[in-house]
Length: 235
Ligand code: ZN
Image (cartoon, rainbow, N blue to C red):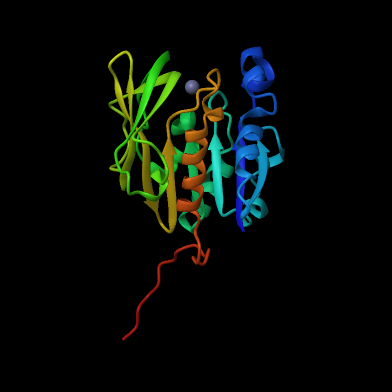
């Protein structure tokens, strides 16, 4: 089994009717619903408001892949928990950072860059697959049309990705590296741009398939989850 924790801030869903309507069970509930259709996925959820944000040492030790959506409460997120996530990624936990999680404390720690970008609401997006042979692109068409999505535009201040699997083109002319993979320590990371809270993006079957594929790609199968250490070599 692949043990997945879907973490969501869960603030907008409680405060904005438009978001509540799209995601009555929260973004985390929607993501859990399509993940549990996979027979080998075991899915738990946690939110900002849980004790320790629901991401205790025990929870992360029992998580193969963490899926993470955040936006409005990034600054209020615990420094200690952000460090804890980083440590678990370095020791092999997979990480899928969604949409505005680009600016989360934990991802900025892992990437080491400002993670800044340009943005604008309510543009049409065409999500182009640039790497059709990549495992995250398995079964995904060349182009996915998203009728309305928040535009994220370049320059996106990220370190050089391992692979750019998807690029977004937006109707206002901007382009973006929308699906990028990174490796940090033993951990595989996928950043994926679509998923603004007022657009029903996580209901689109192809977007769901990309997230399922990304779980399989980031899963640290066969990797011993021990924190990498400095070791003296004798002889
Ligand atoms: Zn957004």
